[in-house]
Image 1: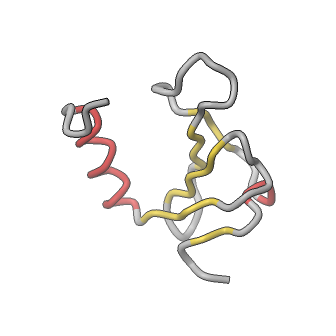
Image 2: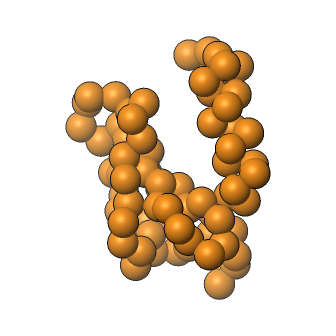
Length: 73
């Protein structure tokens, strides 16, 4: 298995929905805390689909850029 992809994200427990996800059903990003390889991220519409694992520093930089408005809608 590649360290950057988890082929079946449902094998992990403890997923949490992003507080910035929309109220509409199915438009959510979920992350899993305390994974030894980094921060797994998945699409909540496909819980048995893949998750991409980001290094913690990269994920932190991405979240900071989002909060700073660097990715306007």
